[in-house]
Image: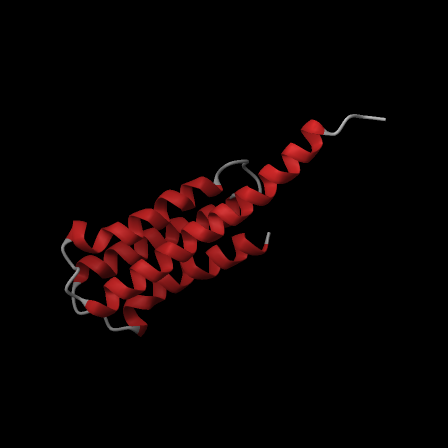
Length: 113
């Protein structure tokens, strides 16, 4: 559960980061706002829909790849922010999945008494 809250915080951070870090170009601003909104929404809804957190895995990977793909790799603040936040989002989305997978395996292989 804590990992979802971390991803929610990171999504909100992405929404406000272009203003806080003063991005000089509209492309990283738009990318961060859209992806941040999606990450925050998925983090909130992932407690209701099983497996939805994996969407955040993909969104985090997109953040890591987006600076060179969208052509703003030369904007250091935006690139560093997106790569760091993207890596964290991927990690937090997988931490929850690993914990749930271990719990599932424990119940699957435990024989009823």
